[in-house]
Amino acid sequence: MTSKKTRKLIKRNIHKVDEVGVEITGPFFKIRAVVYMKVKGKTCNAVCLDFKEEGNDLNRFVDWRANNSYQILENIVVIPSIAPEFWNFPATCRQIHSIHSYVCDVFNINALNLSVRFPSDIYHECFDIGTVKKCTITDVELDNASLVKLFNKQKNMNLLIVENTREIFAFGSKDSFRHVPTVILRNAQARANVLLTRFQGQHGLLENCSLSGFYVNALMKLWSENEMDNLVSLIAYQSSQRLFDYEKVLGDLEWYLKHPERNTLIASRVEKPSEKRIYPYKSIITQEHQFEADTFDCDGGYDVVRNSDGKRATVKISKDYFMFFVWP
Figure (cartoon, rainbow, N blue to C red):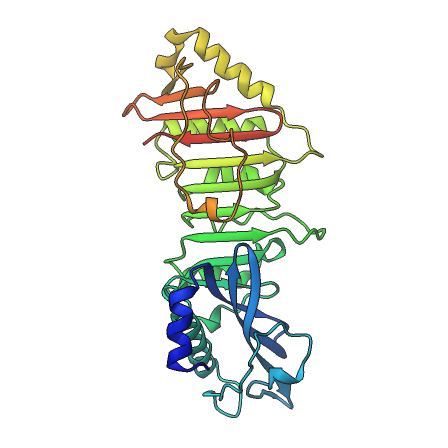
């Protein structure tokens, strides 16, 4: 696609490409594979491959130069298909991975950190077992059976982002994603409460939540009893359209703070540190979300100290959010 001289020139002078990934979209009878680049939050499609149905089979990819709706880099050239005449997932996978690896090489990106996006249906067949590290889907796909198959194949995934489609749909209780180390839900709503008590990962960011004080208390109880020992941080922002009974949680924390003798009856004790502290947040979520400056300021928070091992977590809570930070 480029000469060796041009490739060397690019490698010496371009250092701002943050991500090179693959997007698979479209209904089954017309699938589009896109290799994209992300630079400072903006996405540019580098290569598009279309596969469409003719008769009873999906033919090899269509020449994307003929469609002006694609956002393609300049100096477009034909990429020869290594897939057979008819649709074949293994051959097509090799072609997609080959192009992805090439673009990664040009921009000095590690091709092993494969990012994939599924704006519509989930085509888990397009990627080899254990190759996907970051995955972006939409909230309407959370109850899709294909999502379970994706997680079964991609056990090395370390980041799942669930985008908000703003569509009206029924919120299920399936939590097949609870084991992913880092999860971002842009439109958590009532599903936030499910994750509060079932999350087995390390870092979570939940937006547009319908939080309940009952489930917040349940999370603290489970953590105190070593049931959520992987948890490092969880940040949940309440929806402005929903009421959060956070006063109940504050009341419980204040009661245990004033009655330390009762702490022996539970698995943890509550403290109110006087020193000013900033939590050392080190999650990859910072690459996907810009936090307010005071997010990790734990001054005024409540400390929950686990009696079994002395592990300490800070709770920050208001009508707008719930935050839970486990100290290293």
